Image 1 (cartoon, rainbow, N blue to C red):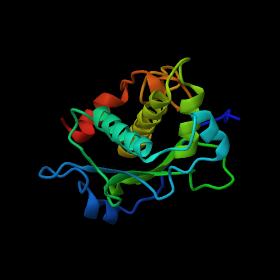
Image 2 (image 1 turned 135 degrees about the vertical axis):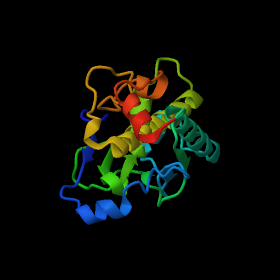
Image 3 (image 1 turned 120 degrees about the vertical axis):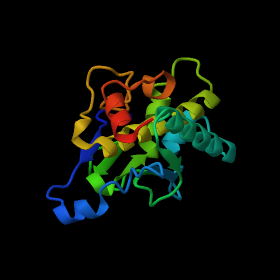
Image 4 (image 1 turned 45 degrees about the vertical axis):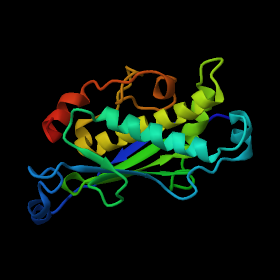
Length: 214
């Protein structure tokens, strides 16, 4: 059964020490080195239960996994194209998002992603592969091939990563959008555009330009 309530969770700590702010301010956006965003897949991230595998038309093969990785990275690069930021697999990057089979928050509602913004200390977040894969299957237009769904999964994951990283970069300056499902800022991944349409930045884009430069 497809989860009915899917949400991205963003939280931020309070009371960051002034001395700590002074010590690390600007560490993510120095004039000589572009700030960094890390994106990677954890071991076991691609494990799917039998019910999802059957709906996908069979288990994920190596070529499928490679395609998902390739498409997701390309989508993340495209989302931040024109901004002064580098994307890599570094897990110690200033802002970072990892992909797990499910989110590391047992007992919570099924969720596609979550982030913790740490202000001048960067931020970290996670995506749930199983949830995003299931939505990609459910939201596929009629007649979509298996390969099209595989690419849709990768596309949706890359875009979810862009959403979470933008939350980490902008903090409370980027509230979730509830009006435009074709935007990166939209509050939920449970929509066809996330996987098969075209997304655009709305209010967050000028803020990202100001924060990161172009």
